[in-house]
Image (cartoon, rainbow, N blue to C red; front, side, top):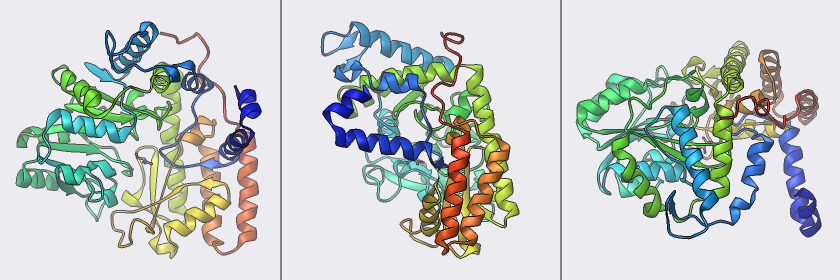
Length: 422
Ligand code: DSN
């Protein structure tokens, strides 16, 4: 496949080659990124990209669905099994569309939704002011407790009682602590709201049983498929049987046309990979690595939002280091350590140049890195911070980072073939 690309489009081939080299030659700490297996990659680059399949299995608007129906049913069944859900819709193009579909399945435009504010760790589509979700719906935003960096469930309940939202959204893109989905479910029940849970970041941890699952406590669970879950870029919805029809209608024809069958095929593969003992070990190691990285950063005098982490993600508040998140993220990138600058709950700065840096361990864990490497990476980060204006030290760190990467090549496969098929 790559040879054909090289032959027919050498320019794009060269850029793909460069990206592969970048991914393998850098310590990738963006918490929403990962490396997929060769099997997922092959499914994603397969002939299923050629097929239109508007509708759902056995209810399509195009013929020629002998294979697509089987694939989609397989993906649905695998998702239902590993998340223990009544119903799964595997068609959303991304987490954003999945969130939209969840809202539209439950409430009407103009109704109130209540989600976590973006500077406090929420996603754009949780009703943040620049997202259309705040224009189509009346958006109320809750925050974390600024003193602790954690949810204050009493305050969330008070806000819910005051505004009586139609939907309460639990879940986050930058919250390093375990989320109590049961309490969110109780709050929603008390105020007569639906509970939508967005587990895009932690889906893999949920599958592995390391983070409590929202499935029993939420009306609809929304997720992406490519973060800790380690599948292709895509989205997915899980829900109780009573919402199945509305969820399906909201995705298609409500928001989307034909599903991307190649992605859906790759999602099916990733879901099978996640249903293995190897995946549970992997997910546990993600959290162990994040904890060690956090502990070492604390030892180096970094302030971490909420004081540490329970999951795959760390949020550094850099104000005591007098460096902006953007400046540090760019310096780290030059040192082959890839992170993203991010707001923190107490950040007075604009999201375009915030005081925070977000990082996570899913990708380095896929490479087989463990606690000693997490410690080493914390040392690299500290060295860059202490030498933020010294390019030769940054370059030196880059060489050390490359050495570490060479010792942990990106693996092709994560499970023993055929051992866990099902
Ligand atoms: N943009 C994703 C992230 O990086 O967290 C959320 O969708």
